[in-house]
Length: 97
View 1 (cartoon, rainbow, N blue to C red):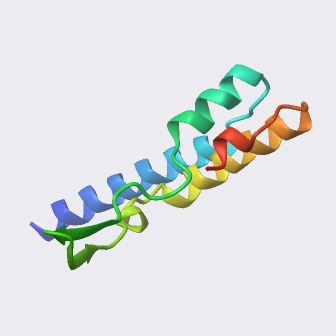
View 2: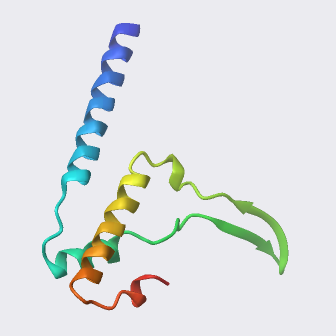
């Protein structure tokens, strides 16, 4: 059974590596593509929340984005898209809020 688990783990890790490499090599050459990337990838983790009950602070749900194996790669891709938009003279202030 451990050989099967090892094989599954190796397959999963190699698949994740392939996706990470594709994200790294993705070239941004068009304005519309850059805008879509910036709109699709949020600038901050959307899962962090404060829990309040009747206006009393109960607790906080920490950001879970760090658990995503592609979090850093997606943030780098978003930054590259923003950089591309800056280079072509596009105003990026609406995307930075």
